Length: 136
Image (tube, rainbow, N blue to C red; front, side, top):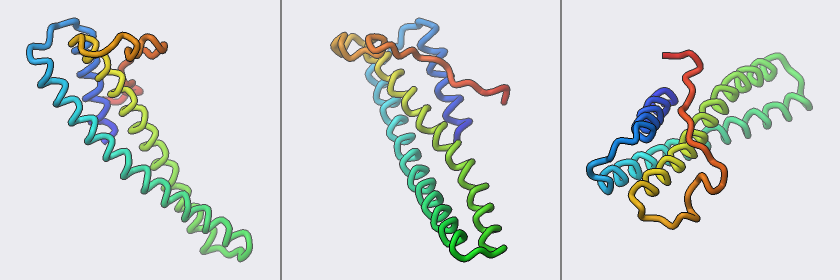
């Protein structure tokens, strides 16, 4: 999912940077808004899963403090090993959705349908492509 989001954001970034005129801007905004809703849903699901894993991990740690045993230690380590990638993935989704918000506002600016006070550059926000960290 993270790679799919990166590809989508990079393609939007290329479109915005190219300066090309978007033929049907309203249709494009509707499609972008729908895509944002999809990623918001994905982000919410991953937030709930990450939160659940964090609660279970802390609960196992508390039980481990009072009832030290090797199986509980193994369970704690396994949960911690799973929790770290969940947090990383949620981080990617959160930053990606925030980037999509800024890009949507950029498209709004192009369509001249919002007040200048709502524009992201007024608040120092810059649109930048998602880095692939050398991955393709």
